[in-house]
Image (cartoon, rainbow, N blue to C red; front, side, top):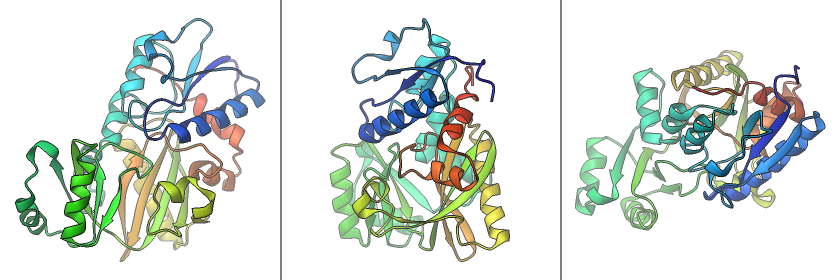
Length: 312
């Protein structure tokens, strides 16, 4: 690969979201990889300094290793654009749209990509007595999955088996979040697809030891999920899910790396969400998929870096 394009790399990591710990781990892993590749690497944590205090001197490119709010929702990307420094992953609008589950699901539907039936409720408009009416109107069956509209790593996600549990969950989540989204639970296989620089490179199947692939299942070894690579799908369905992930990446106008999360049931793929800044930890899925395809972690990180740009 051409290392002359960039020499001095600033890895932005940490931040203030609920995914800070994961971001620090992702960022540190990427720093080690880039140093092995011969880049001059420094780091910046927006928890300690505001984005506008990034010193542009001696920085050729930003590797964005942030996760969660203010890191993958367009906020950080806005600062990078203002600073006119090339940065990795998706741009401002794509990041915002992908992070907001309500917006992204409507874009999926518009582009004929299947996604579970859903509805959303704002805290300011919530009336408990109207909840059953909404569920019936949307023809959504229990279990219902409740989640914040703009969190990652399954933070705040709860599977509600009945109206009592759903109501209790709503009241709990509204203590922290202003808007929630509710989906009909889809069973079946859990399939995740990595797309790098516009190419779908593989699909992995997850079998969580927990009730679903939540934060603990993703990031703690004692609750580690079973990973099956490649996913147990027919060749036809394997290629089909790769195409759907590529389409989702394209319709959201994403760049760099994305990970699309699917459920496969009754011969249908349902796209749950698309992550524009997937984890780069030792337990993360994109590096595992890339490794299976013969792409080392160091080469994966450099591949993402070399796609960095501005004005997206």
